[in-house]
Image (tube, rainbow, N blue to C red):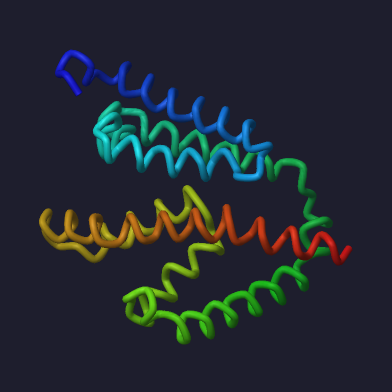
Length: 188
């Protein structure tokens, strides 16, 4: 990308273009593929061809603002939940969480070698399904800050852990949950 186009405004414009293309493609595909998944795929493609820089949102200076906004949006959706509604579902929530974690533990023990991960890393990536984005990013970043003692260790852990955790969270929450929900909705 020529130097005069490497400004925050142009970076955000390119990100916006990817979003518009992903949404348009999703509409063309009659929403057979979720627009967010297409955003991820197009972002990877555009990055590989140099149309988007790596960490483009951080370089544009808006990443933290977007994380705060997304977190605020998530919590604002909880404003309609009353304590009585929440208490009513606590037994079901705990039962589903225990079954989900047990299922993740069993599956990661069976398939961790296929992905080239240790048992622990496979389980950590599977557990991202419990939180989703941005919590996966925040937790991974906090763990890296707590464990790393030097700048080099921080950079290494970020490069090693962050992509795995974010892609796993995106895949488990966005893709797997949609597949599972589509199966269970037919049972209702």
